View 1 (cartoon, helix red, strand yellow):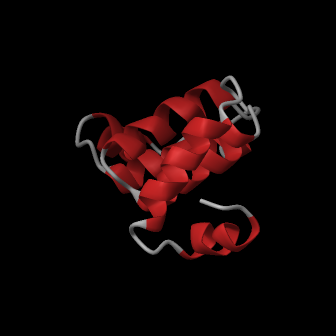
View 2 (cartoon, helix red, strand yellow):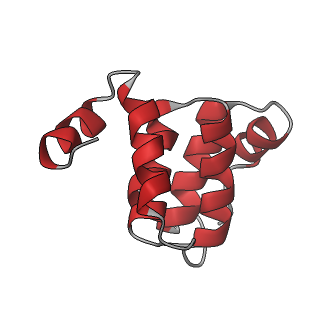
Length: 102
């Protein structure tokens, strides 16, 4: 089973940041596919980040750049994304702030 066609269309053609984020999550987890595809996940996370979606900023910072999953590990970029996310009072990044100085 492939990713929902309407979600991919909304992500690609409409530039819908929520659809881009959902698409990234599906690629990362492998849901609706044969296997996870981290390269595609990072592409869609970054598209949603470019539009300022806090959930995408957190996810790409945490799951990709901090862990080096699908991209080269870059803690500096992860922190930059978390700081942007914190400006939106994102719960998960504010919790992380208690553990790591953001």
